Length: 435
Length: 154
Image (cartoon, rainbow over all chains, first blue to last red; front, side, top):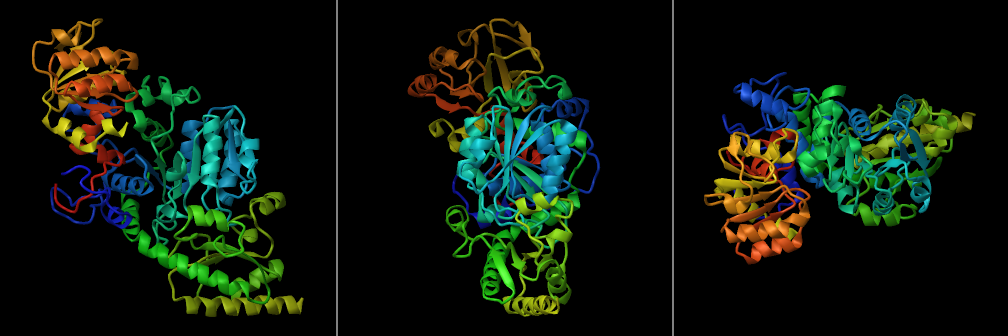
C-alpha cells in the first residue's frame, strides 16, 4: 500500500476500483457472497456492528461484500465518496427522496423526464404530501423561477429520456446551492464515462444500473452516489443533522461527516424499505463496469452514425440526437459530454401513430423492448408503451409525439442496423400512402 | 486545506500511532467522539481521554487537559469547537505530541498552522476512524470509496 503514488485513469479504475483479489483464496473475480447473514465473531462485535461503531457485515438486506464492491467501483468512477445500491433505479430514487423529504417539502423536477420517474414522483407527492414543481430545463431561468425557500431537492437527468434534452448542470447546481438544496442528477444515459455531474457541482447521483452499467440487459439494479460535499447541517435537513428517532438518537451528519447521508440511506432507509440488490446481480454489474468505456465508445459512434443517416431519409421528421450539428443542445454537449451524448435518441415518423406501429413491425434486427442501454439495439414507441400512463399534456412535456420512436443503439455493425431501419422506414411510408 | 489532508501524512499517522489523546471525548455513546474512541480501542490504540467535565470514559481515566497526560502522545485528536483549536495546538506543541488531528468540521487554520510550525504533522476536517477503516479496516464493506486500486492479494 502506497497512498496517492499515482492518480489512476478511468479505465484502470473501472477494472480495479472496489475489488481486490480475494485475500483468502486468491480468486481474481469478486466472489458472489450468496448469503443472507454473516456470523458474528463475538457478542461485543455484534453490538458494535448494530450500533454502527464498527463497520461489519450483518445481513444482506443492509450490506453484502459483493454488492459493496459494486457500490465502491461506481462511486469511484463518479468521483463520489461512496454509494448505496438498490434493487432498481426507481428503488434508489424512491429511497433517496424518502431519506431527504418531509411532508410539506417541495421538489423541483425537470419536466423532460423518464415516464417512470414522473409517475413515481406524482405518486410520492400524493402519498408523502410533498409538492413537485415541474421545470422547463431548457429555459435558462427555469430552475430559478421554480425554486422556493421550501425546495429541498432539484432533480433532473443528464440526458433526458426520451427527449434528449441536456441538463446545464453547473447552472442547476448554482440555483440549488442558493437555496441550500442538493442537486440530484440521474446519470443513467450518460454513465460516468461520458459525464461526471459531481465535477460540475451536482451533489448526488442516481442510476438505473440496469442500462449501460450492466450493459447486456441482464439485471435490474440501481444506485445512489454521494459527492460528500453537501452541507447537511445547513439547518434544512434535520433528519440527517439532528438525533434520528429511527436510529436510537444517532446524529448521522455529526457522527459520520461526509459519509453521514450514505450511512443513513443504508442503515435506516435501505433497512426499512428493503429493496436490496442481490449479490449475483452485483457481480454482473461489476463485469459490466469493467468494460464500460470500450462499450460506450462503440454505442456513441453507432448512435451518431444512425442519427445522421436518419436525417436524410424520406418520411422522417425531427431527429432528436443532442450531438447532431443543428441540435439546440450542441453547446451543452460540447461542454458536458465531449466524448459523446450516449446512444439513446428519438425521432418522429411523419406517418404518426400508425406509421410507428408499422415501422416497429417491419424491423427484424432491433428488438421491440422496454429497456435501453443494451448491447442489442432496442426500439420502442413511447406513446403506446413507456409513456402510456401519462396524460397528453405530460406526453408533450416529455418530448413525445404520436409518431415518436425511441432507439437504443447497440453494438451491432452499423451497416446492418441501417439495413434494418431502412426496411422499417419503407413500411412506415407505405402506411402513410395507404392512408 | 489540502495541505492538511495529505494522503501520505494520513497514512503515516494511522499506521504508526500507538497513543491517541482524545480532546473533548464525551461519555455519551451517541456522540461522534465516543464512536471514534471506542473504535480506536477495539483496534489496539491506547486512548487517553481529555475532558475537564468527565472522570472516566470507556474504562479510561480522563485528564483535565493535555498537560496532565503523563506519557508520550502520538496523536492529539480534537472534537472541540473550532475556536478552541489554537490553544489545544499550543499545548500539543508544548507536550511534544507527534500529530494534531482535527475531526470533521473542526476547522481552524490558525491552530493548524501553530501545530505545523511546532513540528507536528497536521490533519484537518478528516475522521481518524474513517481513515483507519479506509486504509486497514472494513470500509469497503460499506460501499465507500477507499481509493485503493490494486490487482494484488492483500
